[in-house]
Amino acid sequence: MDSPSKSVVDMIEASSGVHFSGFHLDAQDSSKKLEVEQPTSSLKHAQKQPFVIGVAGGAASGKTSVCDRIIDQLHDQRVVLVNQDSFYHNLTPYELTRIHEYNFDHPDAFDTEQLLGAMEKLKHGQAVDIPKYDPKSYKSTVFPARRVNPADVIILEGILIFQDPFVRELMNMKIFVDTDPDVRLARRIRRDTVEKCRDLNMVLDQIRGMHTLIRDAEITKHDFVFYSDRLIRLVVEHGLGHLPFTEKQVITPTGCVYSGVDFSKRLCGVSVIRSGESMENALRACCKGIKIGKILIHREGGDNGQQQLIYEKLPKDISDRQVLLLDPILGTGNSAVEAISLLIKKGVPESNIIFLNLISAPQGVHVVCERFPRIKIVTSEIEIGLNKDFRVIPGMGEFGDRYFGTDDE
Image (cartoon, rainbow, N blue to C red; front, side, top):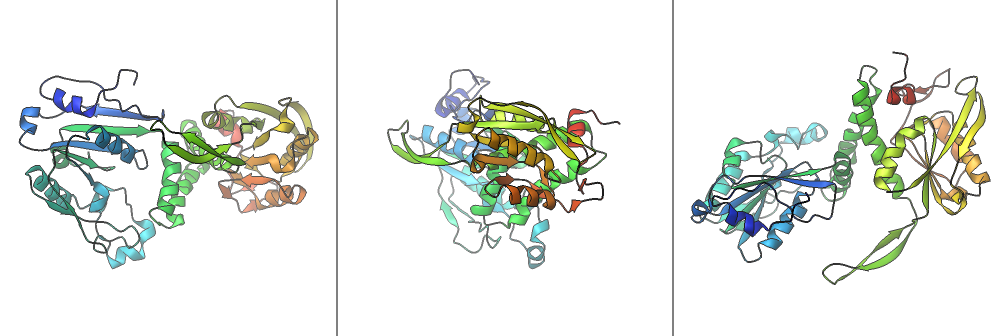
């Protein structure tokens, strides 16, 4: 939002009859938007009971960061934070045996009655014991409950707190945190595997679900492009994590020193026309203003035929840059070898090339790695192999035709 930011205190005071339309927390992440619904009760009523703020949003959208900012603005008030995650149901022995099929993002995964009971007590000035859910054992009986005392403001945070009408009715203010789905998915993969100790296979099912969609011959072009873009964004972001970096210290707005890293700024992309051009938008979204070169390779006699370089347009200083080579399909590896050979002839060190693609046939990976052992390949799935016509199977067909809408049908 471009309007001047308002403090949460101002918003609470304004709820006594003055309408407002926007709420801004000066979030540094431009991909995060906050949508706030008008308070449902007046300050006169809130004087007898705590003011309840609901903060919802998709998984890994940044709800915790928003709550922290609200608490910081309410430093003169007594504030308590209640997380919906604390009210997960304890899994039964049978559910534990089928944990890979359990949906933690469904309303039935939460004990909403227990949540309502706890919130009602807090609203009426009573202390309450909030469960401490253990994501390793999937139970809330492993650790002692957390005693929460009454407060002036209660913040209720969770992905589905707006789903139940009785929970919504408790809230004086509702905030929804809207973050780019690709950013949320990347954050969630990292969080669920590292912080919540969930099986990597459970997280990878999300990626496999998108693969299932784009491989379906009956999917619409719109959906094919949408889910392909999401997968491409993940591959690009993972590839950027392989770039060399140096340690760097910066001064934060609070005057503190933060020790972090500084990635190489000498970076460019090179797309293999034309399928590789489908990956350019994701790269530009991650690296603003990045230079992107082009390589056109013609295949004589099918997928395993003679490769001929037709056109190339590369940055003049490409030999001094880290190069992200873009091509969504790695089949026989012949086109990739031709493209990589050109980059090396232009002076790019082999170790400075990262090859990004969506699917790779084992034969193509072997060909590229045997020829260029110091190159890195980042892919979202390894295929079964190649058929007699040297087409990737199970594959996803002619990716460029499906993405750009130029297939025969």
